Amino acid sequence: MFLKQTLKDNKKLVDYSIELHKKGKILPDTYVIDMDTLIQNASKIYEKASKYGIKLYQMTKQIGRNPYIAAKLQEIGYEGVVAVDIKEALIMHRNGIKVSHVGHLVQTPKYILKKLIKDVRPEVITIFSLEKARQINNVCRELNTTQKILIRFVEEEDTIYPLQYGGFKIDNIKEIIVELLKLEYIEIEGLTAFPCFLFDSKKQSIIETNNITTIKKAKQIIETQFNIKINQMNMPSLTSVYNMDLIDKHGGTHGEPGHALTGSTPLHSVKNLEEKLCMLYVSEISHNLKNTAYAYGGGHYRRSHMENALIVDDVYNEHIVETLYNNPENIDYYFEVRGNHQVGATVIMNFRTQVFVTRSDIAIVSGIKRNTPRLEAIYDSLGRKKELY
Image (cartoon, rainbow, N blue to C red; front, side):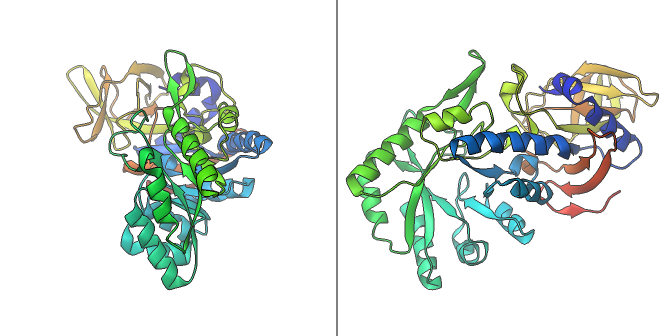
C-alpha cells in the first residue's frame, strides 16, 4: 500500500533496513521505525493542533505500545497515551509514561480498576455502561478520590466497526445522565466516539461520520438540560495535520494521532501529506514452491491492503513484485509473493498495520536523515525491550 511512496520519500530508511537484515542485526518479521522522521511528523501534528487549542493523546498500539517512542512524544508536548486496553496502560505506566485515556476502545476490567485509579491515575476513563460507571465509583469511594469519565453515545446511523460495539443509546441519554449524577465519586468530563472521520476512497478525502453528529447532540442535551459543562469532545480517527481543521470545525477539543505518526494514514496513498512515511516491514524469502515465494510472516493485519514487496538478493539486485492475498482465516506463517526468488533474499514491505496484534519486533533507528544511521533499540510487539541480536 505504501511501498512505492516510501521508496520515493525515505529510500535511506529502506537501504538501512536492508543492511540491518543482511548483517543479522534484525530478524525477519521486524518493523523498522525512523525516529527522526517520526518526531518531525509528530511535531507537525502537535503544532497544527496547538494552533486550534486541540490537545493530543498519542495512540501507540499501531507501533507496538512502544514506550521509547511514547517518551519522545511526551517531550514534544503530547498530553499522554490513550491506552487501547489495560495491558497497554500498565506497560506505559511501568515505563514512566503518562497514561491519559483508557477504556476506549476496550473497557477496563473490573478487578484491575483499583490499581488503575490508584497507581496509573488516568485523566479520563471512557464508559459504555452504568455498571462500569458504578464499579469506578465504588473504587473511588474506597480510595477517597474522584475520577473523570468520558461517555460514548451511539445511534443507529453511527459507524462502528465489528467487534468494537459499545456505548449508550442516545435515545436514553436523559435516564443515563440522571443515573450517573447519583454517583458522587465520578465527574462527567466529556464525550467521545469512534471513528469520527473516515477516508473516502471515491472522494479521495477525509469525511465526517454520523458519530460526530451523535456526540454533538449529546453535548447539547447535557449542557442545556442538566447544566453540566462538557469540557472534552474527543474526536479520534485519522488525527493528522490534514484533518485538524475538521476537528476544530466540529468543536473537538482532543485528537488521538496514531497512523499519522508514521505517515501511514490511507490518505497518503492518494495525496502528498505533511507527515512522511517512516515505518516499514522487513522479512526474508524462506522458500519457493511452484511459482510462489514464501517470506517469513508474523506481522500481518487483516486490513493491511498489502500490494507489493521489494526483493533484494545477496548481490543487492532489487525488484518490486506483487504480493498475494493473505486470507485472514489462516495464521500468517508466511507472506506469499509472486514468482520464485533467492532463498535468504531481503524482503521490504510497507502496509497498514496494528503492531500490537502481531508477533513482530520493532526496531528503532535514528540518524537516517543525517547519514549516521544507528540501531537504538529493539522491542517486541507489546512494548517490552529486547536484547540486540
